[in-house]
Picture (tube, rainbow, N blue to C red):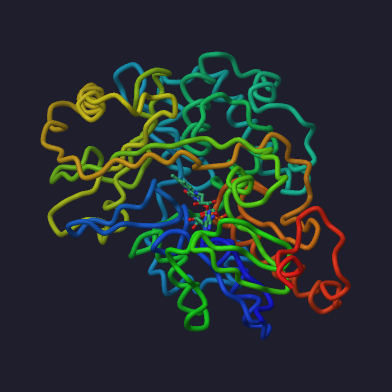
Length: 432
Ligand SMILES: Cc1cc2nc3c(=O)[nH]c(=O)nc-3n(C[C@H](O)[C@H](O)[C@H](O)COP(=O)(O)OP(=O)(O)OC[C@H]3O[C@@H](n4cnc5c(N)ncnc54)[C@H](O)[C@@H]3O)c2cc1C
């Protein structure tokens, strides 16, 4: 009999499997899709690497270092620390003054922000840096909009800068995220270096997959129902195990576990990839939409920092769209290009559309950051995934690693042998 059966081969499931196998447990993962990686995957089309929604990678966390050999990812140089904001038919550089001291002078002279706004911005940055993570986590519960307004930011900067940054990170421009989550994320962006792996973001889960014992993952195997002592597959087969780890996005749990009520909403995301010989910008910088309307949230050219993302002589352009766009719109590609002609001029007409991704459950909408847990165990079934914090690679890996430790303790203690009086019935006892 297996020790653990894991539902889902995303980053959290793969990480948990790796840690458990390295402790000697018999573990198998059942994955509904034909590939590992979940939301962190890449496609390879005509020499272009298309991440399923642009991902950037920060390698600094200790959990990342214990699960991934970052040298084997051949990470690019850092993405430019800062952004260009398209506003009033102009591109305004907003650099990270900690890492681009010289460029900060341009901020001082540009007219995108008033001197008072620049002062408020400097104060905000100093607040983020002078408070460590633990202090920021405890910071009183309020939305980031309330927080920023209290620091004196008015509609102008909220609408032309913060909304667009918020949408780029969380796929939602509402500014309703708890302030501590926004502040922690922006602090991470300011202090850490973000880069792209040479073979696409999907090479991260692939690398963990390669460390697993052969035959650990069964692809194209959708789990139909979860019990405390195993899972029933869509095919009707029952796979018995001492315990089960569920790593699917939270709203999907209700489809496989009777009695589960979904508590977390997700933001959706959409992005378009184009090929061109003349990139709209020549450096790896995010170009944000500061106009507070339109279809586009940001434009980024991955091949300017990681040339492997496009064949020689070409560039790959990623256009991230605002979450409220109508996916049914048949002229969406033309509309997006038309909007970008305003930004970059007629050279946009030469772009060739490669692919559009629409991801319905892209990132969990975390409304309360007070929860301390990174996994959950309920009636003999374990749960983990990025939704225990907020959606990112580090949190998914961390959640899988912490859940595997808890499973180790649980199996070691022999608690699973004591029998579980629970509402999640045990399928094996029904069969016996
Ligand atoms: C567009 C986009 C951009 C992002 N950008 C970044 C970024 O820049 N930086 C960053 O750090 N993070 C980013 N993220 C977040 C990151 O990708 C996720 O946080 C992480 O991949 C989540 O991993 P997970 O294991 O928790 O869940 P998932 O990846 O969702 O894994 C769950 C797995 O379960 C499988 N599954 C579901 N139901 C079943 C079933 N019934 N039976 C069997 N298998 C099932 C799914 O197919 C999937 O493989 C981004 C995400 C998206 C969508």
